[in-house]
Image (cartoon, rainbow, N blue to C red; front, side, top):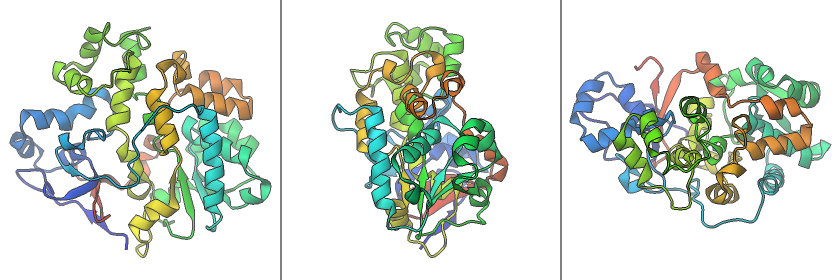
Length: 372
């Protein structure tokens, strides 16, 4: 059964330190605590840095998935936690076509396939792949989850491929809980697309230190420390950096890939929507949720692809995604001019809760938006 638990407040220490977690965000817990200053005083300097590290690089996420022992909380893995294994010869386009066909086979056991579409680069890549690889009969079961923000972000795609051609439902009904997630359907999201592609702070860094993001991070160490405003934060990221990653882009991408990834695995049930109370949470996560970019082939491609395969000019962040979309739509304007946008933030007024974590028994913890 789906179980949503409002995370308890504590006065002097972080709560739930003795619990096993599939995901937990101590920075959210700390920032939504009524006794934040008391709790912060109880933390060692090392743990304060670990918890605060996301604020230095403007990334959501709270622990390094490649080294779970360094987390403040006890994190355990499940089958959703996919790590790269080896270099792949598959191109990004090859993997994306494969994912479309994998989804098609899996989806035939379900009533409808809900595809969350924001108009952003990640979700447009997904929908382009589905439209490219599925026939018209299969597309009859596809329901596009969107709202006015989605349409405004990419009006050409909506008018050309969605309007009067595919079923649609408002994103708002999921955010508000009037439409519940159930076991009869599949739900496709573009989560994990950003962590495999780019650091969230690339525009901010480049504005301060222009034309350096594809240069050696070792030669730009002082710039990176200046941007982070912390030698300790730099050293904490650098000490886990794989040797083959050599650019400034790589340096910041690695943080996002390492620490900003796992939170995306649970956004569907903790942020975008609410499970029907009768749904088995674990079964839903493995059977009904389809996180398009959470895939071993994408992991391997991302881990071992050089920076210039992920970004060209600064306007070409998420370069292979843009190339894939362009091959389908032939829309040069979107390719040349579409920036990264954080689509969820456009729907903030609809959000009622902040995800805190998912424990090893698949209970979903949250804090109310007003708990801050």
